[in-house]
Image (cartoon, rainbow, N blue to C red):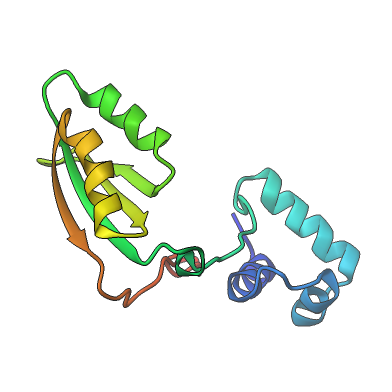
Length: 147
């Protein structure tokens, strides 16, 4: 479990994961060594799994983003999963219940690149692709306050 100070530190890091220990200490009212110890314990318990850098793929030429629903053909589930994992343009993928087995996020530089990547999967699966026009809610965590 986390306490109110842990929650405060987590929320501060969610706003800006580059905050210094000194800044976190000021926010929490603790000393920098105490903050460091709390963060270490949160990491050890798996509450804090990492600190990320948020990069805009468009700066590297990836102008299109798509959501791809993937339904492997019979006997092809593991091979489709291997293909997704081996294709770096797939930046997220969830194995799901329902008619589709995978829902994946894909970044590509062009429609032609999208076709090439999907053609590799379409020999093993049916796909349904939606181009993302706008991201209204960027990936975020649910509220961290405890009940």
